[in-house]
Image 1 (cartoon, rainbow, N blue to C red):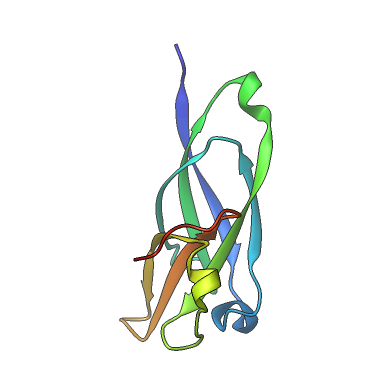
Image 2 (image 1 turned 90 degrees about the horizontal axis):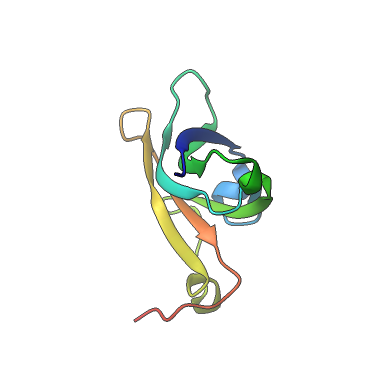
Length: 113
């Protein structure tokens, strides 16, 4: 029988990231399944990614998930990059004054129709 738990992985935000000029590498166990993204109100300028993670010594292998966070209207995305992004979710902050869109950057291009 396999047991799972939920962990929170923080991603610190900065102005370069919100303009699409840099990404974040978030170390997490291989096979982690993203459940949601959101804001922890007690941690300003940081979003959180909650993942379902297998609790097993064999699952101790980690991978770096490459994350891109874009602010609404802050950056443009090329077709090439768009084909490598998997939407994780949207985070609304400060009573809708700031909206961040969170993506996983994949290595393989995906079809975008």
